[in-house]
Image 1 (cartoon, one colour):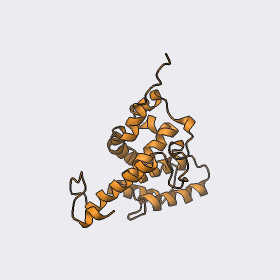
Image 2: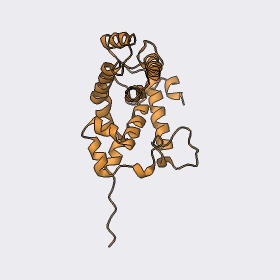
Image 3: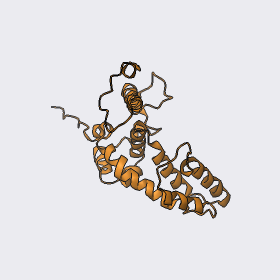
Image 4: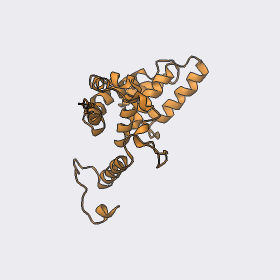
Length: 199
């Protein structure tokens, strides 16, 4: 499957200096997603029903057309719906930017913690995983926000990730969310055919 690269033929859609390897990998990911069905989990058995799960969300929660259209009103409305959240996560996975949503969700969970000791260990985990430079799921933050959050680690409170969380939310809202609304995944949901009346 690396024939395109080995033979020097650039994959279609190569723009803005994106490397051949990354484009090829994204194309493979997209092809894989199409073959497996957009809602199939990686560990689901091949005999399973591809559309039956979207990040463990029951099919019964599949949105109505009206609900799916509401997701187009704001990122907040999309994230409030379990199926919408799972659909957005599936989309981000195809773009290799799932860490932004994971960080945002980790911050939402963090704010619900009541025990100070649990809050401290969770804060350190979030910082190590998403904020620290060169961390495995490092999110794209400006240096001021990163430093501010690092300073907050000296005195851990429920609000110590608020600035970073707002920055990442803004990034998703301006960047990933508009692309999600133009994606095949979302367009398929809002272009659901209504059942024809029986004559």
